[in-house]
Length: 125
Image (cartoon, rainbow, N blue to C red; front, top):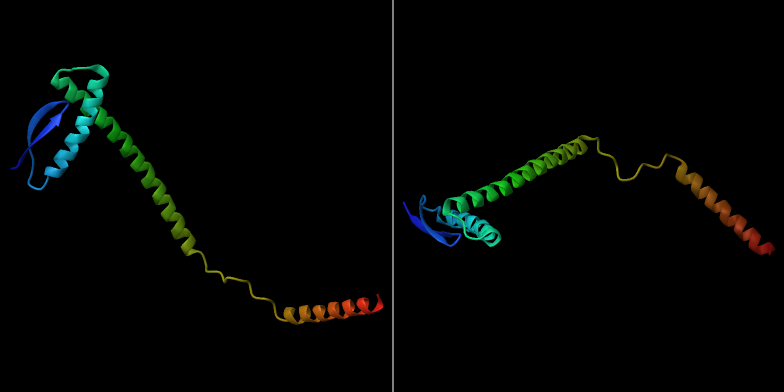
């Protein structure tokens, strides 16, 4: 089992992990170290156990907030998917409504009459 040396709050720790998990251990240790460094910067030197406890609690608080946000986003995603499915289930509509029979002929007749009246008006003026 591989061991890694990680630094948290200026202190080194030897930690064992499963093969292939070294990257995750280093990443987790870096997050814990960032919290410990912030804590030490605000409070000053702390006993090792208190530094680790407080840093872990700060990370747990951030994790809980992230989990709540993930649940909220999953609910919103579920609602959006349901709406997409509802819309897909609606009957398909044509892009443009069909023009009733005879309407085109009537409109052509009206256009011809309007042109005739315009010509009559122009010749009288």
